[in-house]
Image (cartoon, rainbow, N blue to C red; front, side, top):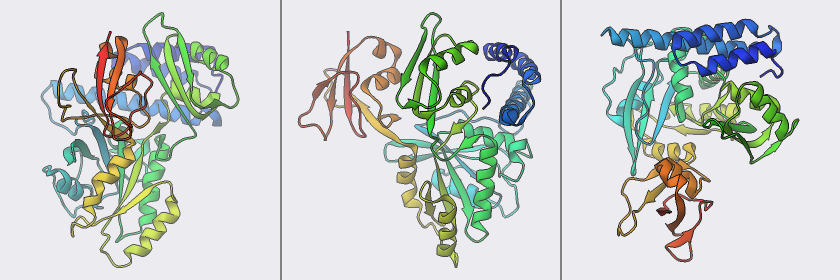
Length: 391
């Protein structure tokens, strides 16, 4: 992402960020695009803004259709359950079969190519969690440029918590997976953890800028980051910087350009001859950075491992809450990221729990005794039970 855009371009981006009506936002983004210099360093930014405009147009058209009572393919699936997982792949690799087996969703399973033309959700129960599985229309070359259902599919992938990249071992697996990865990369969706992860959380007016450095800045200082944020009209926000970040990474986060989504490769038809050889070919492509799960939808092989693999991929933990003076904790856990603190949990439960937090009691197998009285910075682990006390 380019640094040092012209001042008028930054000003126009501020205007585009502040408007809410889709038609007005589209207009402001088009004006912003006209002010971005055309050179190699701005290619990704220009492509990203064009995709954003296309998504806004498609979203607005869908809302108009629904308002008029017309039917049409769904462009967005509201998140339900504890996490949303999107199933991606080329046509006829078994996406519909997998969704049907895992969730009992009513889907059309056919040998005809490109049968799935809209996002199709279903709920997959894993232990005490409900994971929302969404089958997306098939990817093809050019999907990231808006071909066929490309915008619909890749927007769903960007909005998801995790991805299942499904391939058919009876065909060329490397070609299939390379296609998926290429279209995701073109849409600025990463399946490998980036060196830097930056979260910008907008705050109320007057809160000021707070930079939390959990990693290190390579070619800039915290003051440089502040100046960059203010040049884009961001004066009130909390910015978390993890890993090794450059100033370009911070600017990329301002534009919400690159999104990291964890992924597992689902290798269907694992009972096919030469399947083991083809799995080794896949390993040569992805190395150790991405898990490959062989299974067979038709023979119902390997499916029992999918729940635990998805849970591990999501990098989340389950935390149970207990009200003071109650003997038993809640049966339904909260799901939060690994490494989260008591205060992170409090914020997720309700803003009042966060603002008026006093202390907490924690029951955990790893503690020498339970319950243990802890402060807001205490790091939680999977299976912990928490009782929050407020001032």
